Amino acid sequence: MSFALDEARRQGASQSEADVSVSRGLSVSVRLGEVDTVEYQRDRGLAVTVYFGQRKGSASTADLGRAAVVETVGKACAIARYTAEDPYAGLIEPEALARDIPDLDLDHPWDLAPERAIELARGCEAAGLAVDARLRNSEGGSVGSQRHTGVYGNSLGFVAGYSATSHSLSCSLIAEEGGEMQRDHWYSVARDPADLEDAAEVGRVAGERARARLGARRLTTRKAPVAFSPDMARGLIGHFIGAIRGTSQYRKASFLLGAAGSQVFPAFLQMHERPHLPKGLASSPFDQEGAATHDRELVRDGVLDGYVLGSYSARRLGLKSTGNAGGIHNLIVAASDGGLQPQAFLARLDTGFLVTELMGQGVNGVTGDYSRGASGFWVERGAIQYPVHEVTIAGNLKRMYLDIAAAGSDTDVRGAIRTPSLLVSEMTIAGE
Image (cartoon, rainbow, N blue to C red; front, side):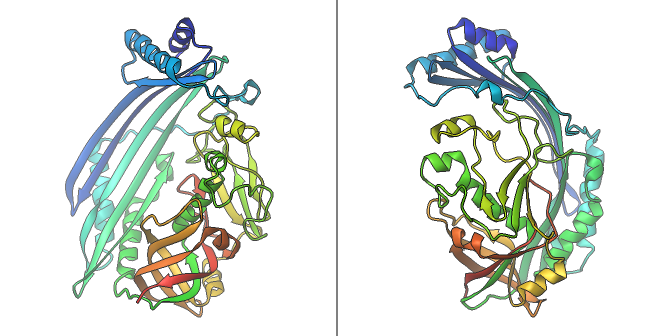
């Protein structure tokens, strides 16, 4: 790291930054009890960015030898000498750099032998298949374990790094009856293997979800309330984050252009960013530019507090970095009152469509138009009546966000965005 930065200065760069990473992992999958794959992964790399004034060049290598580092820095410098000047290019402002690096308890290596991983994957799948005789096929059970170590440094004197682990269990099963086939899955992911759900429980939930989808029907075209299960609501909020990223804002390619300070969600909805949660899947003491991460109220009483910015997009907008170069850090979506319990949430839905799977990518980030294939369950008087498939739900995200009528208490923590179930008061459902 220090050698790369020194070499950049020696070759004439006015500023430079480098990122060194090493990762290793094991992944195993089985299908119908037979081993499908066993994969070891081991990667390392160096990425270097240099600035000649406000001209930028980048290069990377997987060879960490001194000669390769010198050559990589030379390539980055050569690129920078030929690029056009960009008045917004450069390192993060020094005052934004992280000074204290908290230990966020992210590193929990798992001494997992392939034989044990295979045993877990088999047990997970077997537990799922045992749920019902109609579960006759499988897309497999999987176990994965990864450990990543990264160090970032720049010519402002910042050098810091940390290690983080990620472990997972998953199962995907197929239910069959009368020529009909339905698939569903479940998974668990955690920094610490001790925090994973039991393998048999992951399989059981996958089996119950697949079985519940047998007998699925199509709906006639209509307008109705649409509820999103927590894992589906994550994607809904992900489109919001995409719209308020600095890149979307300065390119004027967002359906929420200039929305800071305005009512974007109903007043009961809050969004808190918490980068320093111990063991959090998106926790980080600093962002990809070395900027300190910090707690933030991104949406307060439904009002958007600001954008999601790295240094470049912040300069383009005349603002300051929010420590989000590389993405959001543990965004927690919640109702002011903590949200409705599952049965109360269905009662609030009353009669409508509960979405548990989405297909396709029909989302326009510029206009907010939203149209995606969906499956799930039709609900009447607060009770699930039958499974639904082969329908499309449509609306406009700007209107949909304001039309969120309720949030559940069932927050899904398996990602960078932590969401509960969300209920949109009305959408178009296109079917038969």
